Image 1 (tube, one colour):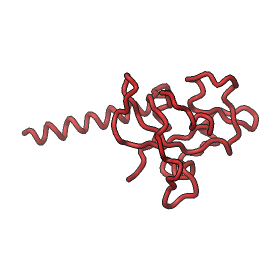
Image 2 (tube, rainbow, N blue to C red; image 1 turned 30 degrees about the horizontal axis):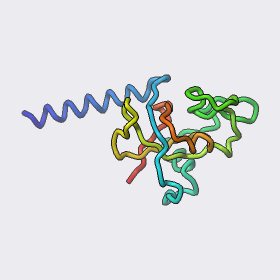
Image 3 (cartoon, one colour; image 1 turned 120 degrees about the vertical axis):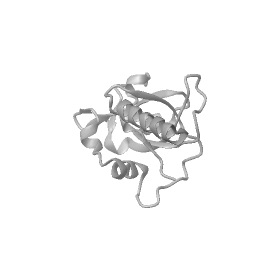
Length: 138
């Protein structure tokens, strides 16, 4: 009996996560992960390529565009002193970790998300659209 209840709870949690991730304005609080500069994906040339291959999404059509520049996904949630648009070559796959409301790291899960090189150097807590975050495979 308990086993079935646990399975039902896990299924509800999974469905809730799918629903949350599908919301167009659903965000997740993150911090940039530390000490990941030397990490490289096994089968791709970059973490952005890793992200694109795992999601099947094309950043060229996914990100807001102005001329030949693209808006960093975290731009609307901090003040960089510019319009947040960068060249596509400046969008990279970045390691982040989810944080709790108080700013503490939620768990040891590592995620990859596309954002600009400037935001990849941030030290503060910031929001990223949930739909863009993928869990790093171990």
